[in-house]
Length: 293
Image 1: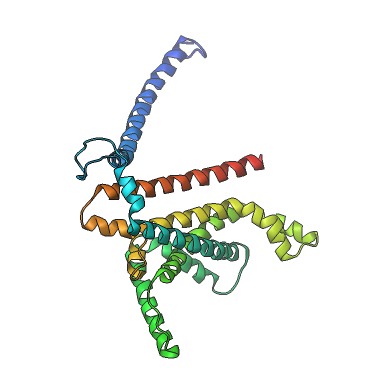
Image 2: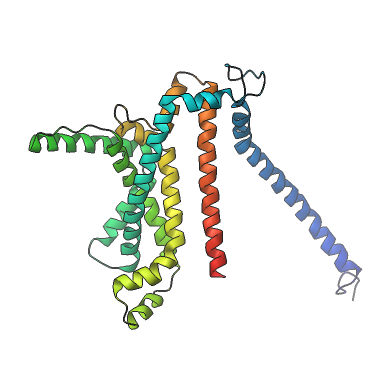
């Protein structure tokens, strides 16, 4: 037997080392690529945060650190009104979309009925179609619906926060349903059958068995809907009316007139809100995992 063939011998160590060298090279390349990707994604955010504390009125010229623009942000009534509109729209649309999306996910995963495949396909449409297409569809729908209501009752409706909420519910339902459905797919249906064998009604089985088990999925879908509602620009721009400006739409409109340090402060505010939502989602998931253990 040669040295290279001896198990555990010096030849085996040489072979292992020769295999490890290319692996280390690949690891270094992948690590470098990961750092480049992180730098590409997060360096612009870091620059935005730094320049939001710049005292100069010119965006790209640094003078000295200051909280000037955050003070002007708090005192700007238009920004505060837009922020309030965003929070109201996001809260209402998230609650409604979470309820409807959870029911849709349950119906698709636990029941069988005529037209289910067609409904399943329609449920994915808001996820895959472009935002501009859905915005035009919703705008036409609201215009035609308001015209019909006016002809039938003589009551005139106009676009505002109500139409924004309905539009956000329309596309958020699909995202919530997909998250809840993914959670339901991993659950054993025998648990609900066991609850029925123990003389639990359908409502009792859902409230005491199904709902606690899918609660992480419902919470994840709700946080996703809240984030999408707070960040939406295109659809909100089309279906909003006078005096119904949300914060992302305000930022988009301000950017068309030129970037100002105030926009940097508003963007950082939105960034902090998104980060808090992500941290809340991680905390909820971790608590659920610890409870399951």
